[in-house]
Amino acid sequence: MTESHTSRTLCESADVVVLGAGPAGLVVGLLLQAAGIDCVILERASRTHVQTRARAGFLAPNTVRVLERHDLADGLHRDGRRHGTCEFRTEDGRFRLDYGSLGQGGQHHVYPQQNLVTDLLTRYLDSGGRIRFRTEGLAVRDADSARPSVTTREPDGRPTRWTARYVAGCDGRHGAARRSLPPDTVRHHRHDHGVTWLGLLAATPPSLDAVGYAIHAHGFAGHMARTADVTRYYLQWRRGTPADAWPEQRVWDELDIRMRAADHGPLRRGALLERGVFDLTCDVVEPLRHGSLFLAGDAASLLAPAAAKGANLAVLEAEILAQALVDALARGDTAGLDAYSDRCLAHIWRAQEFTGWMTRLLHAAPEQDRGAGGGSFFHAALQRSRLNSLRTSRIHQDWFAENYVGV
Ligand code: RFL
Image (tube, rainbow, N blue to C red):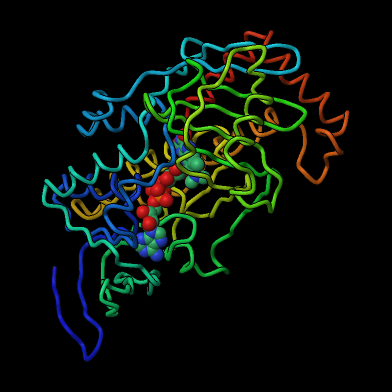
């Protein structure tokens, strides 16, 4: 590590500069740290913000295995709960799939992402890891050289240049890593599923002992456990409508209608802690490398949240990337880095395909194709057929289970 000043720009260095302290960046940082590699994590937000950002909650078996392999799973085993059932509610009634005991998939662990991030961050800091909060990466420069650098804005506004051997771009969809990719060498594939969700966090215990997926003429509604006191709900939402357009009472009344509470039991209501609107869009950057810059997590690929894959892919890619960086820096073996992009893209496209299928299972048709009152007959009939197949075909159920928990 070196530190020097030019006339106005502070210069620092590390063998690996990791952008972003989400699940991807923290796993990369922890694994490099454990292997004795000199690294630093640069994070735009404050520590408090990073540790309280509520997002994912369903961790796949592979994610748990990665965390266990590196002795990072204590919190998850202490406070997480195993989960293996989903319930579909439609106009034809409801059916449950015990996906945890189907196929060769396994169960999820329900453990809020902010708890996981807090565990990883605490371990990283306790083991002497370097991290700079409120330090925004502005651009990755000279990535096609052996000495790339990252320009940053420090908390006091001072410009800094971090030089490195490698840069791990784990700073999400809107981060500096993506922005720094030259458009002529990297393709950016985008897709819009044409559907929008209102995501809600409610201060109330779960109402079902399963993930709830409700298909209704008014649109989709979803229920996902988080903790004993907090539950995530989703409502399909008209694109462009602000998150706060409806008062709480109307949100709960609509959830009751779409979840068919009158037939299947009431929902436990509580204060809405958080609302967010997001369009179900996805994208993939290809390849996930430009010279010495590697992308992982949401920076590499964004998935619609319908199948709960994003955080799980982030952890998978982070372990692969960290191992390859250790091989390169400790042993001079760059085969892992050369294979990184192809290896991860195979997982990413599989996850994108299943997420797209899941989106079409939950939504009859993109908004622009829908007629008034819930969609054209054709799309609705296809959706019903899809659901019937899932309800009745054991092979289809096994396929679902393997893809639902797999990455
Ligand atoms: P993150 O977690 O976004 O972390 C990126 C970090 O980079 C920082 N950053 C920068 N730092 C420095 N310089 C810059 N220029 C920077 N720009 C950004 C940010 O502050 C942040 O700290 O990305 P990462 O690590 O790749 O992890 C990805 C996951 O967070 C994401 O895929 C999941 O949350 C997606 N997701 C779900 N995934 C699941 O596997 N299971 C789920 O149940 C699940 N539910 C969800 C979700 C995402 C949701 N949102 C965001 C729509 C539910 C929701 C509501």
